[in-house]
Image 1 (cartoon, rainbow, N blue to C red):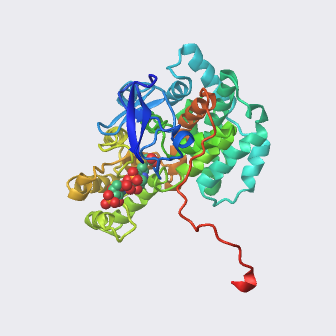
Image 2 (tube, helix red, strand yellow):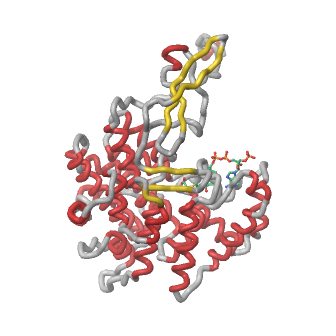
Image 3 (cartoon, rainbow, N blue to C red):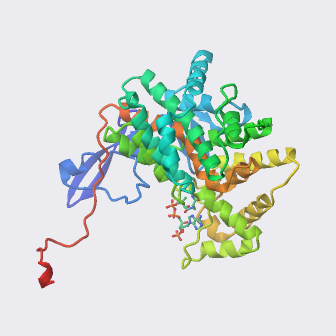
Length: 432
Ligand code: CMC
């Protein structure tokens, strides 16, 4: 980003205030209001931060009007065509460019060396209720990693960051698979160092002690693609949670755990579970697709069409486009079909020709088709948001790094417009 290139004028109380305007590399402009309060006792009002750039970032670029998404400048579609490995993308997001052979090899080895959970951490895991929500388990386990990896609580150089990142990215997969195994009453399957990242995860999820799960190339590719497409999405709710926690100089584990908690919400990553519940309900005859669309439009009804709409995209989410094609590709190679894919297609068709969705520019988002792919892999619905978290972890780490090392970074501390009681006196309980 250039330094300020222009100025804007704000007229208030017969005063003219001149504000700097910054321009990003893609031409986006942002008015700098940082000194408004200090100099003029004025704040800006933007309750959901929908119009506020909270940082300068060079990780991910989105053009919501045109449906463009790029990681470190690379259009997301290129990750579909040339099939890079998820860990290569993770490295690029965290370190700013694609790794060379040596860097990728080193990262791969670091992931392999750190697949296992510390036995103490595993014992803590065993103390959690078997039927606890997987996202609660994940956030607790990431938080508890701070107890077992104290050497990574202070990260002041790239080498220690790489060590912490490798532990998080590797262990999160083991935690996820163990969570599933334990809830299903199945014995744990330990990671196999000879397998690649995605195949290793599927092995831990589905192998049996007496029978190795055969990971097909299609499934491994589909999982790799799902994880890559979730890997970062600039200043979304969970990334912002990570940044806010980081800005207090909190450690990487505490910050990523906050990211997991934010992601859990149904308006964010939890939407992938809601989409699947919605599709299943329609398939089982609970409601017709037309009724779902009508309920989503009804302002007296809380129901929303999950997997539709986005704060930034006013166009088809490019990730949803790729995932939809990936569903077609995968099912053309599988013997079975998934009737929920037909339900999803029908819902999309109805929504995209409905004036309500057209006027509001509501299109399928990443969560609309991702669940159908995960289901084809045999991943249970209650694990879907955990899968999103595995994919998003490199993004959170990259956002944490950028925030932590930013020049002049300060604690993130918004202001408010107070609308409560004016000054009033305490009244003793007997007199109330
Ligand atoms: N179904 C029905 N109406 C919708 C939907 C939807 N899915 N999404 C937005 N709208 C309506 C909304 O009611 C509002 O209507 P009106 O102007 O009449 O008040 C208008 O569209 C604008 O919506 P908004 O709520 O102001 O938009 P937002 O930017 O605050 O919310 C969103 C974005 C993603 C939370 C929202 O679109 C939504 O709830 N979608 C369903 C949940 C979902 O799929 N979430 C996953 C998002 S993508 C992955 C991720 O980030 O995790």
